Length: 250
Image (cartoon, rainbow, N blue to C red; front, side):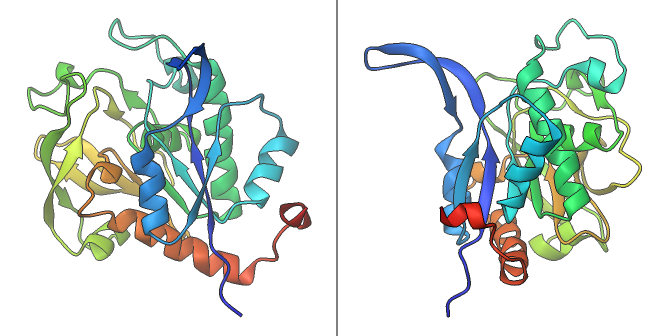
């Protein structure tokens, strides 16, 4: 019997958009995230923002083998006890509540997680960390400030981390587009990569099956989606030993 295809939840935007004659809010995410999951051998499931309660979060997570926390708008600084910087975007309360709950719940369940850009910030805040609200306040380096553009950014991986093991390189160039970053790393996380100017570019959770967060955008590098492949492998191992919830067969 073939191993089950891992089911990977991917968090999405809930944005107003025009599609043909329709002008309304859509649940959406860039296709590159879905391709990363599919190319790694998983099946992506979209997770749009929705009202949060413990039962809903638990039910959703119980149906998944892995989770991708995708990029997007700034996390509300009230979530980590800070005042709002003038350059911080308006809060997206629905998405913050939903994704913070998913991140915390996934870690409790030891569900494999790949957290990307905003996602790594959500992961850090969910576990007790804080954010730097405007990167240009502390560095002149280009981390992708131009609208619609990614900045090639050299990052150094940390020896002995899972990220170094997965990528097999002590230095690589990644696709960045962010004006916020991790400030205080959550107590349970460890730094797995930094840029030359000292910004945290990757974190991971020691002892977890797979919890990796990167400030860069691996989904944008079609030639190198190793982190997606690693997530799906970890999810596959979990799927092979976890009974499938009966509702999935309904």
